[in-house]
Length: 544
Ligand SMILES: Cc1ncc(C[n+]2csc(CCOP(=O)(O)OP(=O)(O)O)c2C)c(N)n1
Ligand SMILES: [Mg+2]
Image 1 (cartoon, rainbow, N blue to C red):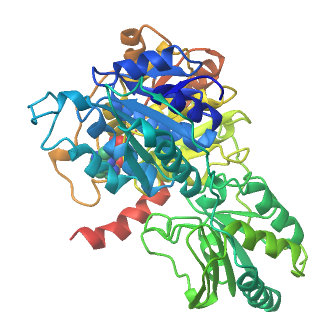
Image 2 (spheres, rainbow, N blue to C red):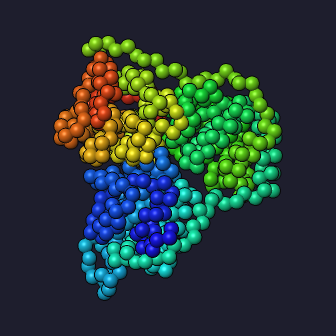
Image 3 (cartoon, protein in one colour):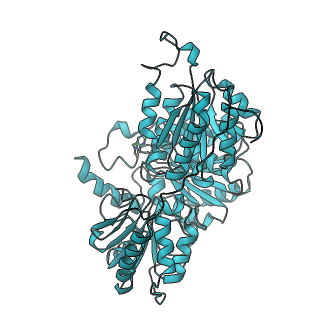
Protein backbone atom coordinates (compact mmCIF):
# COMPACT_ATOMS: atom_id res chain seq x y z
CA UNK A 1 0.00 0.00 0.00
CA UNK A 2 2.55 2.63 -1.09
CA UNK A 3 0.24 4.71 -3.24
CA UNK A 4 -1.55 7.77 -1.86
CA UNK A 5 -4.85 6.36 -0.68
CA UNK A 6 -8.24 8.01 -0.52
CA UNK A 7 -11.10 6.78 1.63
CA UNK A 8 -12.59 4.91 -1.31
CA UNK A 9 -9.33 3.41 -2.61
CA UNK A 10 -8.45 2.25 0.91
CA UNK A 11 -11.81 0.56 1.40
CA UNK A 12 -11.58 -1.10 -2.02
CA UNK A 13 -8.07 -2.32 -1.20
CA UNK A 14 -9.18 -3.78 2.11
CA UNK A 15 -12.10 -5.60 0.51
CA UNK A 16 -9.79 -7.08 -2.12
CA UNK A 17 -7.24 -8.10 0.54
CA UNK A 18 -9.92 -10.16 2.25
CA UNK A 19 -10.98 -11.89 -0.96
CA UNK A 20 -13.87 -9.80 -2.28
CA UNK A 21 -13.88 -9.84 -6.10
CA UNK A 22 -17.50 -8.85 -6.76
CA UNK A 23 -19.65 -6.18 -5.13
CA UNK A 24 -23.42 -6.41 -5.53
CA UNK A 25 -25.78 -3.46 -5.57
CA UNK A 26 -27.74 -0.69 -7.24
CA UNK A 27 -26.20 2.81 -7.47
CA UNK A 28 -27.80 6.14 -6.60
CA UNK A 29 -26.53 9.70 -6.56
CA UNK A 30 -25.18 9.48 -3.00
CA UNK A 31 -22.96 6.56 -3.98
CA UNK A 32 -22.23 7.11 -7.69
CA UNK A 33 -18.73 8.43 -7.00
CA UNK A 34 -17.85 5.26 -5.12
CA UNK A 35 -19.34 3.14 -7.92
CA UNK A 36 -17.02 4.86 -10.40
CA UNK A 37 -14.07 4.13 -8.09
CA UNK A 38 -15.07 0.47 -7.94
CA UNK A 39 -15.45 0.34 -11.71
CA UNK A 40 -11.95 1.76 -12.08
CA UNK A 41 -10.58 -0.92 -9.76
CA UNK A 42 -10.35 -4.67 -10.30
CA UNK A 43 -13.54 -5.22 -8.32
CA UNK A 44 -16.44 -6.30 -10.50
CA UNK A 45 -19.69 -4.46 -9.87
CA UNK A 46 -22.73 -6.73 -10.14
CA UNK A 47 -25.81 -4.62 -10.69
CA UNK A 48 -28.90 -6.48 -9.64
CA UNK A 49 -32.45 -5.40 -10.49
CA UNK A 50 -33.25 -4.64 -6.87
CA UNK A 51 -31.22 -4.01 -3.74
CA UNK A 52 -32.75 -6.91 -1.81
CA UNK A 53 -31.49 -9.22 -4.55
CA UNK A 54 -28.04 -7.67 -4.16
CA UNK A 55 -28.15 -8.22 -0.40
CA UNK A 56 -29.12 -11.88 -0.76
CA UNK A 57 -26.55 -12.43 -3.51
CA UNK A 58 -23.84 -10.92 -1.28
CA UNK A 59 -24.93 -13.19 1.59
CA UNK A 60 -24.67 -16.34 -0.57
CA UNK A 61 -21.34 -15.06 -1.92
CA UNK A 62 -20.07 -14.66 1.65
CA UNK A 63 -21.19 -18.18 2.57
CA UNK A 64 -19.21 -19.66 -0.32
CA UNK A 65 -16.32 -17.19 -0.48
CA UNK A 66 -15.83 -16.28 3.18
CA UNK A 67 -16.82 -12.60 2.79
CA UNK A 68 -19.19 -10.62 0.56
CA UNK A 69 -20.10 -6.98 -0.04
CA UNK A 70 -23.12 -4.99 -1.10
CA UNK A 71 -23.12 -1.31 -2.04
CA UNK A 72 -26.27 0.79 -2.12
CA UNK A 73 -27.53 4.32 -1.90
CA UNK A 74 -28.89 6.03 1.18
CA UNK A 75 -32.15 4.78 2.77
CA UNK A 76 -34.12 3.95 -0.41
CA UNK A 77 -31.51 1.30 -1.16
CA UNK A 78 -30.14 0.80 2.32
CA UNK A 79 -33.46 0.01 3.93
CA UNK A 80 -34.15 -2.58 1.22
CA UNK A 81 -31.10 -4.54 2.30
CA UNK A 82 -32.21 -4.41 5.93
CA UNK A 83 -33.91 -7.79 5.48
CA UNK A 84 -30.96 -9.52 3.83
CA UNK A 85 -28.65 -8.01 6.46
CA UNK A 86 -30.92 -9.35 9.20
CA UNK A 87 -30.63 -12.78 7.61
CA UNK A 88 -26.84 -12.49 7.42
CA UNK A 89 -26.75 -11.50 11.09
CA UNK A 90 -29.10 -14.27 12.21
CA UNK A 91 -27.32 -16.97 10.20
CA UNK A 92 -23.77 -15.64 10.62
CA UNK A 93 -22.66 -14.53 7.19
CA UNK A 94 -19.96 -11.84 6.94
CA UNK A 95 -21.36 -9.25 4.52
CA UNK A 96 -19.97 -5.70 4.34
CA UNK A 97 -22.78 -3.20 3.66
CA UNK A 98 -21.49 0.01 2.09
CA UNK A 99 -23.96 2.85 1.87
CA UNK A 100 -23.56 6.26 0.31
CA UNK A 101 -25.02 9.21 2.19
CA UNK A 102 -25.57 12.95 1.74
CA UNK A 103 -22.32 14.92 1.83
CA UNK A 104 -21.24 16.61 5.04
CA UNK A 105 -21.37 20.01 3.38
CA UNK A 106 -24.97 19.41 2.25
CA UNK A 107 -26.21 18.78 5.76
CA UNK A 108 -25.63 22.23 7.21
CA UNK A 109 -28.88 23.60 8.75
CA UNK A 110 -30.67 20.26 8.29
CA UNK A 111 -32.11 20.76 4.82
CA UNK A 112 -34.77 18.31 3.68
CA UNK A 113 -32.69 16.23 1.30
CA UNK A 114 -34.09 13.43 -0.82
CA UNK A 115 -34.05 9.91 0.71
CA UNK A 116 -33.69 11.24 4.27
CA UNK A 117 -36.19 9.56 6.62
CA UNK A 118 -36.19 11.40 9.94
CA UNK A 119 -32.65 12.34 10.90
CA UNK A 120 -29.40 11.95 8.99
CA UNK A 121 -28.52 9.02 11.23
CA UNK A 122 -31.85 7.14 10.92
CA UNK A 123 -30.39 4.50 8.60
CA UNK A 124 -27.29 4.11 10.79
CA UNK A 125 -29.53 3.41 13.80
CA UNK A 126 -31.38 0.70 11.90
CA UNK A 127 -28.12 -0.98 10.89
CA UNK A 128 -26.71 -0.79 14.41
CA UNK A 129 -29.41 -3.32 15.25
CA UNK A 130 -28.64 -5.56 12.29
CA UNK A 131 -24.86 -5.69 12.28
CA UNK A 132 -22.01 -6.55 14.59
CA UNK A 133 -20.13 -3.28 13.93
CA UNK A 134 -20.91 -0.05 12.12
CA UNK A 135 -19.34 3.33 11.39
CA UNK A 136 -19.91 6.53 9.49
CA UNK A 137 -16.67 7.21 7.66
CA UNK A 138 -16.60 11.00 7.58
CA UNK A 139 -13.23 11.92 9.06
CA UNK A 140 -10.07 11.24 6.99
CA UNK A 141 -7.99 11.13 10.18
CA UNK A 142 -9.87 8.15 11.61
CA UNK A 143 -11.23 6.66 8.38
CA UNK A 144 -8.69 3.85 7.93
CA UNK A 145 -8.77 2.75 11.56
CA UNK A 146 -12.57 2.75 11.51
CA UNK A 147 -12.74 0.80 8.23
CA UNK A 148 -10.35 -1.76 9.74
CA UNK A 149 -12.25 -2.00 13.00
CA UNK A 150 -15.52 -2.65 11.22
CA UNK A 151 -14.23 -5.08 8.58
CA UNK A 152 -12.18 -7.01 11.12
CA UNK A 153 -15.35 -7.46 13.20
CA UNK A 154 -17.09 -9.05 10.20
CA UNK A 155 -14.25 -11.56 9.89
CA UNK A 156 -14.04 -12.22 13.60
CA UNK A 157 -17.74 -12.72 14.32
CA UNK A 158 -18.83 -13.91 10.84
CA UNK A 159 -21.62 -11.38 10.89
CA UNK A 160 -22.54 -8.37 8.73
CA UNK A 161 -21.10 -4.90 9.25
CA UNK A 162 -22.12 -1.44 8.05
CA UNK A 163 -20.08 1.42 6.60
CA UNK A 164 -21.75 4.69 5.63
CA UNK A 165 -19.76 7.23 3.61
CA UNK A 166 -20.96 10.79 2.95
CA UNK A 167 -20.49 11.42 -0.74
CA UNK A 168 -18.18 14.42 -0.40
CA UNK A 169 -15.46 12.59 1.54
CA UNK A 170 -14.75 9.57 -0.66
CA UNK A 171 -11.78 11.21 -2.39
CA UNK A 172 -10.17 12.62 0.75
CA UNK A 173 -6.57 11.44 1.16
CA UNK A 174 -5.91 9.10 4.05
CA UNK A 175 -2.97 7.37 5.68
CA UNK A 176 -3.46 3.61 5.90
CA UNK A 177 -3.76 2.25 9.43
CA UNK A 178 -2.55 -1.07 10.75
CA UNK A 179 -5.04 -3.87 10.51
CA UNK A 180 -5.61 -6.03 13.53
CA UNK A 181 -7.18 -9.05 11.84
CA UNK A 182 -8.08 -9.82 15.40
CA UNK A 183 -9.01 -13.41 15.66
CA UNK A 184 -11.36 -15.15 18.06
CA UNK A 185 -10.34 -14.23 21.63
CA UNK A 186 -7.36 -16.14 22.93
CA UNK A 187 -8.21 -19.30 24.77
CA UNK A 188 -7.06 -19.52 28.38
CA UNK A 189 -4.78 -22.60 28.44
CA UNK A 190 -5.63 -23.65 32.00
CA UNK A 191 -9.35 -23.42 31.45
CA UNK A 192 -9.02 -25.34 28.17
CA UNK A 193 -7.06 -28.10 29.91
CA UNK A 194 -9.68 -28.51 32.60
CA UNK A 195 -12.56 -28.41 30.11
CA UNK A 196 -10.87 -31.02 27.91
CA UNK A 197 -10.19 -33.28 30.86
CA UNK A 198 -13.84 -33.23 31.82
CA UNK A 199 -15.09 -33.62 28.24
CA UNK A 200 -12.75 -36.48 27.35
CA UNK A 201 -13.69 -38.28 30.56
CA UNK A 202 -17.37 -38.09 29.65
CA UNK A 203 -16.84 -39.01 25.98
CA UNK A 204 -14.59 -41.98 26.76
CA UNK A 205 -17.00 -43.34 29.36
CA UNK A 206 -20.07 -42.94 27.15
CA UNK A 207 -21.63 -45.89 25.35
CA UNK A 208 -23.02 -44.04 22.37
CA UNK A 209 -21.47 -40.61 21.75
CA UNK A 210 -22.73 -38.77 18.67
CA UNK A 211 -21.45 -35.57 17.09
CA UNK A 212 -23.92 -32.94 15.87
CA UNK A 213 -22.05 -30.65 13.46
CA UNK A 214 -23.59 -27.18 13.22
CA UNK A 215 -23.33 -24.29 10.83
CA UNK A 216 -20.45 -22.62 12.67
CA UNK A 217 -18.17 -25.44 11.52
CA UNK A 218 -18.86 -24.18 8.04
CA UNK A 219 -18.70 -20.45 8.78
CA UNK A 220 -15.42 -20.66 10.70
CA UNK A 221 -13.88 -22.99 8.11
CA UNK A 222 -13.45 -25.93 10.48
CA UNK A 223 -14.59 -28.72 8.14
CA UNK A 224 -11.12 -30.26 7.97
CA UNK A 225 -10.90 -30.38 11.75
CA UNK A 226 -14.28 -32.07 11.87
CA UNK A 227 -13.02 -34.75 9.46
CA UNK A 228 -9.92 -35.23 11.61
CA UNK A 229 -12.05 -35.64 14.72
CA UNK A 230 -14.21 -38.19 12.95
CA UNK A 231 -11.16 -40.12 11.81
CA UNK A 232 -9.62 -40.03 15.26
CA UNK A 233 -12.74 -41.20 17.11
CA UNK A 234 -14.82 -43.07 14.50
CA UNK A 235 -17.89 -41.42 16.04
CA UNK A 236 -21.06 -40.98 13.99
CA UNK A 237 -22.04 -37.45 12.97
CA UNK A 238 -25.31 -35.76 12.06
CA UNK A 239 -25.83 -32.26 10.66
CA UNK A 240 -28.65 -29.78 11.17
CA UNK A 241 -30.75 -28.27 8.39
CA UNK A 242 -28.82 -24.99 8.61
CA UNK A 243 -25.51 -26.83 8.43
CA UNK A 244 -26.58 -29.40 5.83
CA UNK A 245 -23.56 -30.25 3.64
CA UNK A 246 -21.10 -29.37 6.42
CA UNK A 247 -19.70 -32.79 5.55
CA UNK A 248 -19.93 -34.78 2.33
CA UNK A 249 -23.17 -36.68 2.74
CA UNK A 250 -21.81 -40.01 1.52
CA UNK A 251 -19.32 -40.09 4.44
CA UNK A 252 -19.59 -43.52 6.13
CA UNK A 253 -19.98 -41.93 9.57
CA UNK A 254 -22.75 -39.55 8.43
CA UNK A 255 -26.23 -40.17 9.81
CA UNK A 256 -28.13 -37.43 7.98
CA UNK A 257 -29.92 -34.26 9.03
CA UNK A 258 -31.11 -34.25 12.63
CA UNK A 259 -34.25 -32.17 12.87
CA UNK A 260 -36.44 -33.44 15.68
CA UNK A 261 -39.64 -34.92 14.28
CA UNK A 262 -39.00 -33.36 10.85
CA UNK A 263 -35.95 -35.43 10.01
CA UNK A 264 -35.70 -39.14 9.30
CA UNK A 265 -36.98 -41.19 12.24
CA UNK A 266 -33.79 -43.25 12.42
CA UNK A 267 -31.68 -40.11 12.81
CA UNK A 268 -33.97 -38.76 15.52
CA UNK A 269 -33.86 -42.05 17.40
CA UNK A 270 -30.12 -42.45 17.05
CA UNK A 271 -29.28 -38.91 18.15
CA UNK A 272 -31.76 -38.76 20.98
CA UNK A 273 -30.71 -42.11 22.42
CA UNK A 274 -27.10 -40.94 22.66
CA UNK A 275 -25.73 -40.70 26.18
CA UNK A 276 -23.19 -38.06 25.07
CA UNK A 277 -24.11 -35.58 22.37
CA UNK A 278 -21.19 -33.44 21.19
CA UNK A 279 -22.60 -30.25 19.68
CA UNK A 280 -20.13 -28.37 17.49
CA UNK A 281 -21.29 -24.85 16.58
CA UNK A 282 -24.98 -25.76 16.54
CA UNK A 283 -27.74 -23.11 16.56
CA UNK A 284 -30.46 -24.40 18.85
CA UNK A 285 -33.12 -22.72 16.68
CA UNK A 286 -36.73 -23.87 16.28
CA UNK A 287 -36.38 -24.98 12.65
CA UNK A 288 -33.07 -26.72 13.37
CA UNK A 289 -34.78 -28.60 16.18
CA UNK A 290 -37.89 -29.46 14.17
CA UNK A 291 -39.94 -26.71 15.86
CA UNK A 292 -38.85 -28.06 19.22
CA UNK A 293 -40.02 -31.56 18.46
CA UNK A 294 -36.52 -32.57 19.52
CA UNK A 295 -35.77 -34.37 22.76
CA UNK A 296 -32.24 -33.25 23.45
CA UNK A 297 -31.28 -33.58 27.09
CA UNK A 298 -28.86 -30.80 28.04
CA UNK A 299 -27.61 -33.01 30.86
CA UNK A 300 -26.05 -35.27 28.20
CA UNK A 301 -24.54 -32.54 26.00
CA UNK A 302 -21.07 -31.16 25.48
CA UNK A 303 -21.56 -28.02 23.41
CA UNK A 304 -18.95 -25.72 21.91
CA UNK A 305 -19.68 -22.68 19.75
CA UNK A 306 -18.16 -19.31 18.94
CA UNK A 307 -20.06 -17.98 21.93
CA UNK A 308 -19.52 -20.52 24.70
CA UNK A 309 -18.46 -23.96 25.82
CA UNK A 310 -20.81 -25.83 28.10
CA UNK A 311 -20.69 -29.30 29.54
CA UNK A 312 -24.01 -30.52 30.87
CA UNK A 313 -25.36 -27.63 32.99
CA UNK A 314 -22.19 -25.58 33.48
CA UNK A 315 -20.07 -23.39 31.18
CA UNK A 316 -16.42 -22.57 30.71
CA UNK A 317 -15.34 -19.02 29.86
CA UNK A 318 -12.79 -18.15 27.18
CA UNK A 319 -12.49 -21.47 25.38
CA UNK A 320 -12.54 -21.00 21.60
CA UNK A 321 -14.40 -23.58 19.50
CA UNK A 322 -11.42 -24.25 17.24
CA UNK A 323 -9.08 -24.77 20.21
CA UNK A 324 -11.54 -27.09 21.90
CA UNK A 325 -11.97 -29.26 18.77
CA UNK A 326 -8.19 -29.34 18.26
CA UNK A 327 -7.89 -30.38 21.90
CA UNK A 328 -10.36 -33.23 21.40
CA UNK A 329 -8.27 -34.42 18.45
CA UNK A 330 -4.93 -34.27 20.22
CA UNK A 331 -6.10 -35.81 23.52
CA UNK A 332 -6.50 -39.50 24.27
CA UNK A 333 -10.00 -39.74 22.91
CA UNK A 334 -11.11 -43.36 22.66
CA UNK A 335 -11.20 -44.71 19.11
CA UNK A 336 -14.27 -46.86 18.59
CA UNK A 337 -15.20 -49.57 16.15
CA UNK A 338 -17.00 -48.09 13.16
CA UNK A 339 -20.59 -48.85 14.01
CA UNK A 340 -23.34 -50.00 11.76
CA UNK A 341 -25.28 -46.74 11.69
CA UNK A 342 -28.40 -45.68 9.77
CA UNK A 343 -26.67 -43.77 6.94
CA UNK A 344 -28.95 -41.83 4.58
CA UNK A 345 -30.35 -44.13 1.91
CA UNK A 346 -28.50 -44.03 -1.43
CA UNK A 347 -30.39 -42.01 -4.00
CA UNK A 348 -32.32 -44.31 -6.30
CA UNK A 349 -33.31 -42.81 -9.60
CA UNK A 350 -37.08 -43.21 -9.94
CA UNK A 351 -38.34 -44.62 -13.25
CA UNK A 352 -40.68 -42.18 -14.98
CA UNK A 353 -44.13 -43.33 -16.02
CA UNK A 354 -45.34 -41.59 -19.13
CA UNK A 355 -48.23 -39.23 -18.43
CA UNK A 356 -48.13 -39.74 -14.65
CA UNK A 357 -48.67 -36.48 -12.73
CA UNK A 358 -45.74 -35.31 -10.67
CA UNK A 359 -45.62 -35.46 -6.89
CA UNK A 360 -43.19 -33.71 -4.51
CA UNK A 361 -41.74 -37.11 -3.62
CA UNK A 362 -41.05 -38.03 -7.22
CA UNK A 363 -39.61 -34.59 -7.98
CA UNK A 364 -37.07 -34.78 -5.16
CA UNK A 365 -36.24 -38.41 -5.87
CA UNK A 366 -35.42 -37.40 -9.39
CA UNK A 367 -33.52 -34.22 -8.41
CA UNK A 368 -31.49 -36.24 -5.92
CA UNK A 369 -30.06 -38.46 -8.61
CA UNK A 370 -29.53 -35.43 -10.84
CA UNK A 371 -26.99 -33.79 -8.49
CA UNK A 372 -23.34 -33.99 -9.38
CA UNK A 373 -20.09 -32.85 -7.80
CA UNK A 374 -20.46 -29.34 -9.18
CA UNK A 375 -24.04 -28.73 -8.16
CA UNK A 376 -24.72 -26.26 -5.37
CA UNK A 377 -28.29 -26.54 -4.11
CA UNK A 378 -29.93 -23.35 -2.89
CA UNK A 379 -33.37 -23.83 -1.40
CA UNK A 380 -35.93 -21.20 -0.45
CA UNK A 381 -38.03 -21.67 2.67
CA UNK A 382 -41.25 -23.53 1.96
CA UNK A 383 -41.47 -27.10 0.81
CA UNK A 384 -38.41 -26.54 -1.39
CA UNK A 385 -36.36 -26.40 1.81
CA UNK A 386 -38.09 -29.13 3.77
CA UNK A 387 -38.13 -31.63 0.92
CA UNK A 388 -34.41 -30.94 0.39
CA UNK A 389 -33.59 -32.29 3.88
CA UNK A 390 -33.04 -35.75 2.50
CA UNK A 391 -31.21 -34.82 -0.68
CA UNK A 392 -27.69 -36.25 -0.81
CA UNK A 393 -25.29 -33.38 -1.31
CA UNK A 394 -22.10 -34.61 -2.98
CA UNK A 395 -19.40 -32.49 -1.43
CA UNK A 396 -19.11 -30.28 1.59
CA UNK A 397 -20.60 -26.78 1.50
CA UNK A 398 -22.87 -27.36 -1.46
CA UNK A 399 -26.17 -26.53 0.20
CA UNK A 400 -27.34 -23.03 1.08
CA UNK A 401 -30.61 -21.99 2.67
CA UNK A 402 -32.19 -19.43 4.93
CA UNK A 403 -32.93 -22.27 7.30
CA UNK A 404 -33.18 -20.26 10.51
CA UNK A 405 -34.22 -16.70 9.60
CA UNK A 406 -36.42 -18.26 6.90
CA UNK A 407 -36.82 -15.33 4.53
CA UNK A 408 -38.47 -16.09 1.21
CA UNK A 409 -36.69 -14.75 -1.87
CA UNK A 410 -33.12 -15.82 -1.02
CA UNK A 411 -32.60 -18.69 -3.44
CA UNK A 412 -32.78 -16.95 -6.84
CA UNK A 413 -30.35 -14.11 -6.03
CA UNK A 414 -28.44 -16.54 -3.80
CA UNK A 415 -27.71 -18.60 -6.91
CA UNK A 416 -26.10 -15.52 -8.49
CA UNK A 417 -23.87 -14.92 -5.49
CA UNK A 418 -22.89 -18.58 -5.16
CA UNK A 419 -21.92 -18.99 -8.81
CA UNK A 420 -19.92 -15.77 -8.91
CA UNK A 421 -18.12 -16.83 -5.73
CA UNK A 422 -17.22 -20.15 -7.34
CA UNK A 423 -17.74 -20.27 -11.12
CA UNK A 424 -17.15 -24.03 -11.14
CA UNK A 425 -20.49 -24.47 -9.40
CA UNK A 426 -23.81 -24.70 -11.18
CA UNK A 427 -26.65 -23.60 -8.93
CA UNK A 428 -29.75 -25.76 -8.63
CA UNK A 429 -32.25 -23.25 -7.29
CA UNK A 430 -35.27 -24.82 -5.56
CA UNK A 431 -37.98 -22.24 -5.05
CA UNK A 432 -41.71 -22.19 -4.32
CA UNK A 433 -43.97 -20.22 -6.65
CA UNK A 434 -44.67 -17.67 -3.87
CA UNK A 435 -40.98 -17.09 -3.21
CA UNK A 436 -40.25 -17.03 -6.94
CA UNK A 437 -42.74 -14.21 -7.49
CA UNK A 438 -40.73 -12.18 -4.95
CA UNK A 439 -37.40 -12.71 -6.66
CA UNK A 440 -37.87 -13.79 -10.29
CA UNK A 441 -36.58 -10.54 -11.79
CA UNK A 442 -33.11 -11.35 -10.53
CA UNK A 443 -32.91 -14.02 -13.21
CA UNK A 444 -32.43 -11.04 -15.52
CA UNK A 445 -29.28 -10.28 -13.51
CA UNK A 446 -28.18 -13.91 -13.89
CA UNK A 447 -28.71 -13.57 -17.66
CA UNK A 448 -26.82 -10.28 -17.78
CA UNK A 449 -23.77 -11.74 -16.10
CA UNK A 450 -23.79 -14.96 -18.11
CA UNK A 451 -24.75 -17.30 -15.26
CA UNK A 452 -26.61 -20.56 -15.78
CA UNK A 453 -28.65 -21.60 -12.74
CA UNK A 454 -31.19 -24.38 -13.13
CA UNK A 455 -34.28 -22.97 -11.45
CA UNK A 456 -36.96 -25.40 -10.33
CA UNK A 457 -40.19 -23.57 -9.47
CA UNK A 458 -42.43 -25.69 -7.25
CA UNK A 459 -45.71 -24.48 -8.66
CA UNK A 460 -48.40 -25.48 -6.18
CA UNK A 461 -50.50 -22.37 -6.84
CA UNK A 462 -49.66 -20.52 -3.65
CA UNK A 463 -48.32 -20.57 -0.13
CA UNK A 464 -48.54 -24.31 0.39
CA UNK A 465 -46.65 -24.27 3.69
CA UNK A 466 -49.28 -22.01 5.22
CA UNK A 467 -52.41 -23.73 3.93
CA UNK A 468 -52.48 -26.55 6.50
CA UNK A 469 -52.08 -24.01 9.32
CA UNK A 470 -54.83 -21.54 8.37
CA UNK A 471 -56.04 -21.33 4.78
CA UNK A 472 -57.75 -18.53 2.89
CA UNK A 473 -57.51 -16.62 -0.38
CA UNK A 474 -54.48 -14.86 1.09
CA UNK A 475 -52.53 -18.07 0.45
CA UNK A 476 -53.23 -17.99 -3.31
CA UNK A 477 -50.90 -16.36 -5.83
CA UNK A 478 -51.61 -15.11 -9.32
CA UNK A 479 -50.73 -17.88 -11.73
CA UNK A 480 -47.88 -16.97 -14.08
CA UNK A 481 -46.42 -18.81 -17.04
CA UNK A 482 -43.06 -19.20 -15.32
CA UNK A 483 -41.40 -21.02 -18.20
CA UNK A 484 -42.05 -18.06 -20.52
CA UNK A 485 -39.87 -15.74 -18.44
CA UNK A 486 -36.83 -16.80 -20.42
CA UNK A 487 -38.45 -15.07 -23.41
CA UNK A 488 -38.96 -11.93 -21.32
CA UNK A 489 -35.33 -12.01 -20.18
CA UNK A 490 -34.17 -12.90 -23.69
CA UNK A 491 -31.95 -15.63 -22.29
CA UNK A 492 -32.06 -19.29 -21.44
CA UNK A 493 -34.73 -21.89 -21.84
CA UNK A 494 -38.00 -22.62 -20.03
CA UNK A 495 -39.87 -25.90 -19.57
CA UNK A 496 -43.41 -26.52 -18.45
CA UNK A 497 -43.38 -29.77 -16.53
CA UNK A 498 -46.49 -31.66 -15.44
CA UNK A 499 -45.59 -35.34 -15.68
CA UNK A 500 -42.79 -37.64 -14.61
CA UNK A 501 -41.49 -38.13 -18.15
CA UNK A 502 -41.61 -34.37 -18.86
CA UNK A 503 -39.49 -33.82 -15.76
CA UNK A 504 -36.87 -36.34 -16.87
CA UNK A 505 -36.69 -34.82 -20.36
CA UNK A 506 -36.47 -31.26 -18.99
CA UNK A 507 -33.69 -32.12 -16.52
CA UNK A 508 -31.62 -33.88 -19.18
CA UNK A 509 -32.03 -30.93 -21.54
CA UNK A 510 -31.44 -28.29 -18.84
CA UNK A 511 -28.13 -29.88 -17.96
CA UNK A 512 -26.96 -29.32 -21.56
CA UNK A 513 -27.76 -25.60 -21.56
CA UNK A 514 -25.09 -23.07 -20.81
CA UNK A 515 -27.61 -20.38 -20.01
CA UNK A 516 -30.23 -20.22 -17.29
CA UNK A 517 -33.15 -22.62 -17.32
CA UNK A 518 -36.53 -22.44 -15.59
CA UNK A 519 -38.58 -25.56 -14.90
CA UNK A 520 -42.18 -24.70 -14.06
CA UNK A 521 -43.05 -27.84 -12.13
CA UNK A 522 -46.78 -28.25 -11.57
CA UNK A 523 -47.68 -29.89 -8.28
CA UNK A 524 -51.05 -30.45 -6.62
CA UNK A 525 -51.77 -27.63 -4.12
CA UNK A 526 -52.34 -30.15 -1.32
CA UNK A 527 -49.24 -32.26 -2.03
CA UNK A 528 -46.24 -31.86 0.23
CA UNK A 529 -43.12 -33.57 1.44
CA UNK A 530 -43.23 -35.84 4.44
CA UNK A 531 -41.09 -33.39 6.41
CA UNK A 532 -43.54 -30.56 5.76
CA UNK A 533 -46.48 -32.70 6.84
CA UNK A 534 -44.73 -33.26 10.16
CA UNK A 535 -43.78 -29.60 10.51
CA UNK A 536 -47.23 -28.21 9.80
CA UNK A 537 -48.74 -30.64 12.30
CA UNK A 538 -46.32 -29.25 14.90
CA UNK A 539 -46.89 -25.60 13.88
CA UNK A 540 -50.67 -25.91 13.95
CA UNK A 541 -50.43 -26.13 17.71
CA UNK A 542 -48.61 -22.76 17.86
CA UNK A 543 -50.78 -20.54 15.61
CA UNK A 544 -54.16 -21.26 17.25
C1 LIG B 1 -40.18 -12.63 3.04
C2 LIG B 1 -41.17 -13.59 3.67
N1 LIG B 1 -42.48 -13.28 3.63
C3 LIG B 1 -43.40 -14.13 4.17
C4 LIG B 1 -43.00 -15.30 4.77
C5 LIG B 1 -44.03 -16.24 5.39
N2 LIG B 1 -44.12 -17.50 4.60
C6 LIG B 1 -43.48 -18.61 5.01
S1 LIG B 1 -43.73 -19.89 3.97
C7 LIG B 1 -44.71 -18.97 2.97
C8 LIG B 1 -45.29 -19.57 1.74
C9 LIG B 1 -44.28 -19.75 0.67
O1 LIG B 1 -44.90 -20.11 -0.52
P1 LIG B 1 -44.07 -20.78 -1.67
O2 LIG B 1 -42.84 -20.04 -1.90
O3 LIG B 1 -44.98 -20.95 -2.82
O4 LIG B 1 -43.66 -22.19 -1.06
P2 LIG B 1 -44.65 -23.36 -0.58
O5 LIG B 1 -45.05 -23.04 0.82
O6 LIG B 1 -45.83 -23.37 -1.49
O7 LIG B 1 -43.83 -24.60 -0.66
C10 LIG B 1 -44.84 -17.68 3.44
C11 LIG B 1 -45.62 -16.61 2.77
C12 LIG B 1 -41.61 -15.55 4.82
N3 LIG B 1 -41.12 -16.64 5.41
N4 LIG B 1 -40.72 -14.70 4.23
MG1 LIG C 1 -46.09 -22.54 -3.39
